[in-house]
Image 1: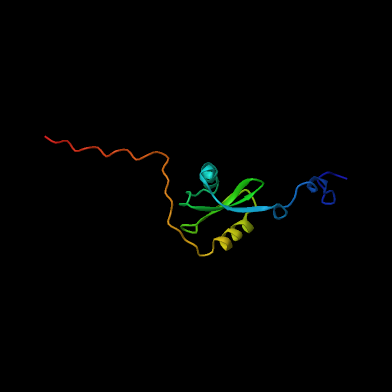
Image 2: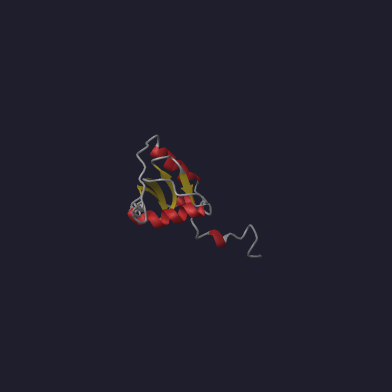
Length: 115
């Protein structure tokens, strides 16, 4: 029997389906910033303003929703449809004031020259 035949399924016996793995929903914290940026880049979209509610599988953030705007970002290379729905349901209509964080403090404005 060829290893690629449909009747030979041993290659898939040890890989659990995405829906069989536990999911954790939690509010993102400061240590998640880099992973949220990576997730937004993979999703080809800017990171929406925080705070964020994230969905994790296997200790990896696979989807997130902005509690300020309701915008979602998700890993396009993983099955995340159910995670996006969970985030939408859990966040509901809750909207909070956006958190804007800056990587660097604002530079002082230059002073006008006086003669």
